[in-house]
Length: 486
Image 1 (spheres, helix red, strand yellow):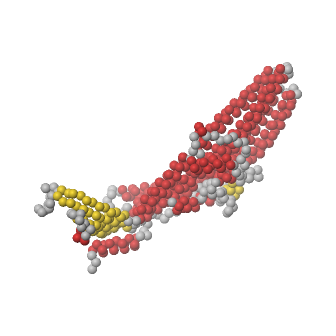
Image 2 (cartoon, rainbow, N blue to C red):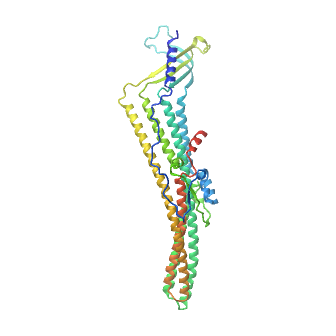
């Protein structure tokens, strides 16, 4: 007949095998959200800046900004990836989540320890029940090993591991979301900077033209042809444009400082060379709405956090059931160092430990309810993120469409305004009109050209935000790939 400890051990192992697949967490399903069959019908005949994506027509997985074919933007994006402080912080946060996941996973394995002890002891002369022959002073040498393993009967450990894994996946998606956000900010700032360079060039050309107009009025005034009022109006127009030029330069410097922070450099020592070359508006493949759920890293993060919260319901429920663990202790102990590792000095203990909380004043029930509420909260947040993502896509598609139409009309307005200015200057030289007509034509022409440049910039910015809203070149497949690499 087998001894009782061995029988108890075999019984515990049999119970662990029988209940090894038990899980108290609810079956997980991602929260449902309303998803349309398609985006609204954006994109008139005047605007071809986006196209419905075909199966093999998606944004580039890496380097989505290369769609803009701009070397300056490419160079700055590489600096951002290498030096941005916020991106480094997000990476460190992801690495923490990975470490926490590894800590949780360690619960699946037994814990084994080795200890050694050598000490000199003195017993109290008045120690209760001290034997008459027990010496007051003695040595004690111990070398032992321990083994502890929790039998995961109710899935508490497995659900803890699953929650930790989902948290790490959510952190990986957070990292991708931060990276995409920073890349979009940089692209947006570069586009704004390029638009300001074009505005500055236009204002500089206007200053030169207005200086010539002022000289003309001064010459005509000196000849008694024009009044001093014409000279004052010409001077006012010139000074106004110079002021606009200085204000635009200030905007450019602030934008340059923002770019410096994004690429991890000091604003005091950073500059971007002026460039008036236009950036072409790319054709952006806009995936169907259903695939947006797999292409937005923030949506993936919210969904994984919902899954993690669901797993923690199982962890909380497992507290209602007994905890069973196997423990073993063994080694050598002797009052003398010599001959410590001999058979007479051996000791050992082995057996299962069972723990069941009988009364806790409702603590376990409250813990389960809190876990359920946390899951509901995470699910509601997930639905909000998804709906917000659809809104962002629609918003930027609307801007691309409407700004495209507006640009065509504004181009016509700019051509007409320039024609009016040319006619006004010719008639002024002929003495047929006063300089007020010239001033009005100058103002209209400059404003129409600035508005045209602004529309170009706003369309490009909307395209960047559309790419960001579509998830850039990211996909949910990267979550598992990234996690497996680490």
